[in-house]
Length: 252
Ligand code: IPE
Ligand code: IPE
Ligand code: MG
Image (cartoon, rainbow, N blue to C red; front, side, top):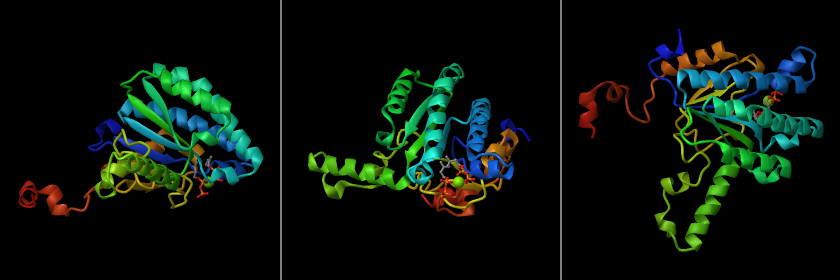
């Protein structure tokens, strides 16, 4: 089945790209080789999203907890990150892909921060795909920084505490400008969120696959899209409400 035939295509796909290290170890390679191979999958996936019409893709590249890895791996990942941004930016732009970043970028070396800033500025608006890279990102950090911003609004008298509602906080969260993820994919077999997008995933469909990230090719992605298209998203309503216009109108 080609994804153009799918009834429901997710508008926003978020991915936890896990399993690079285990993929490499399985082949007696260094973990770093797994990261390098993983980057290749990103390229193919981005092209495929543009092709089928997924408008938002948000990739977990480096978590706030990943600093705890051996220093050599962290250094390698940061270098790979800089190199990937440098090498891919032009091609992405030509393909109508806009690049953005979320996460606590303050912790990164100056060189990387400057690069990120200049790249974010250089892309034109109205892309075919918005590719967001979560780097030094943590869902708890995100909620905390949103809470800080809301507190600032209260202190400066813009709003009163009793006026704070879900929307007030949602507007301060990362990715607030785009729709929430419809589909979360985690490769590598683990069934956890590892502190990714905790707020934004509240009603996202979750898809877990045993495949390691370097094995997650376009056909594996298509499988995930097909699985998504078969889900029924009820958002708290009943199956009947979703399928019957009459029941729907009674409830309103
Ligand atoms: C995901 O793969 C990549 C990053 C976290 C940067 P891992 O490096 O976590 O691979 P495994 O889970 O050890 O196999
Ligand atoms: C999550 O993978 C982070 C990224 C994919 C960037 P991890 O491999 O760091 O997650 P845990 O530690 O197994 O939960
Ligand atoms: Mg992992």
